[in-house]
Image (cartoon, rainbow, N blue to C red; front, side, top):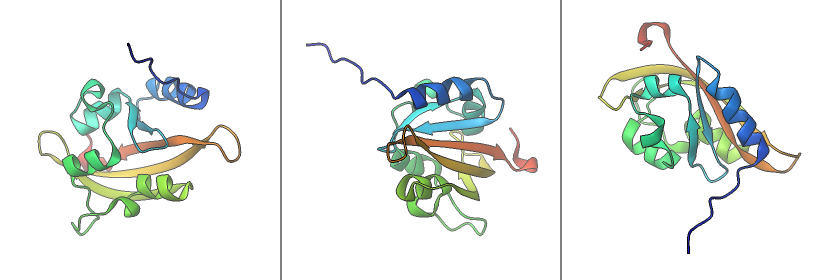
Length: 137
């Protein structure tokens, strides 16, 4: 029997449409931490087309990107802005370093926000990311 794709919440559908129109890198994750979308700017920033990154989890991303703080120490999920937002369901901001698909080290500033369909209905996370001036692709 053919599997029917899960219907996404309208908030995530609208967030994806919004992100697709931006020149700033935007990443969307579902409530389980699966990457459900990133735009063209996100592709340029990571060096990986969305079609290849779709369905990856935050843990997968961490293994591939090795996120670090300004001093070079690897960061666990709960210390990443995106991880904080996923775990605490509140906005978070920070500067991190990570590696692109081809091994380039990037320094970025990111702000993550929880997405709610209703007051208690957490449907995912949106993360807006911009490279620090000297690290723009």
